[in-house]
Image (cartoon, rainbow, N blue to C red; front, side, top):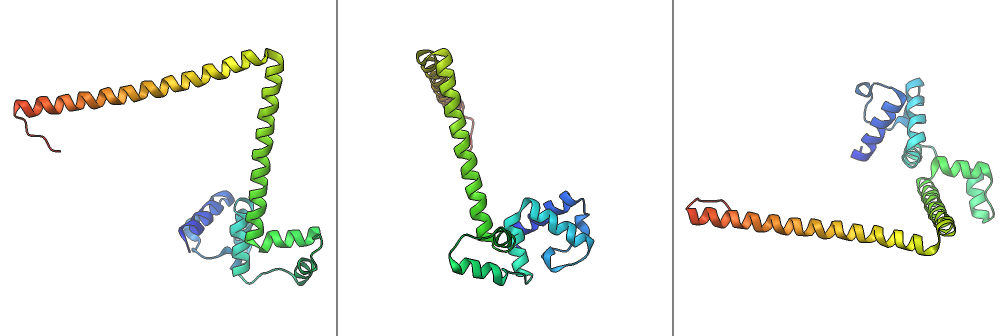
Amino acid sequence: MTPNEIEVLQRACQAARIDASKIKPENPFTKSGSTATLLQASVAEFAPEQAAKWRCEAGAGLSVQTLSEIQSGGDLSEAAMNDLWLHDHQFVADKQREKSTAIENQLAWLEAEADKKRRAREGDKAVDFQNAKAAAEKEARAESAKRAAEMQKRIDQKRADDARLAGVITNG
């Protein structure tokens, strides 16, 4: 098992409230019983891509119906989509990426809409002023941090020079 798979198994044990010290580092989808079922459900809940991989490694795979629908090139039925979700880790990864992208797009749209509303409420000049002020403050903090680092470097150099002149041996 890879370190990532062990981590997934550990998290699944924690989520299912199973004592991990009694679980072997093996694919839980090759096991049966109530503990294995809890573990499988837990893995499927928070790591569906890994669950799909483990299901396939345990001998499960896409049904003939799903394969037939894929080969036909038409729209897939809900049953076929479910089958893909359960047995095709690449499909799961693609769907999760799509969902993440959709959420990011929605957040960007919400931010843009909030900015429009704020501009309508406060006026473009006021909002632009607030944005410019925030950018200037950020730049000033960065400049201040840069100066502080330079000052500390000079202080450290001065101490090293003074120590060397005083005859103190320093490492470095």
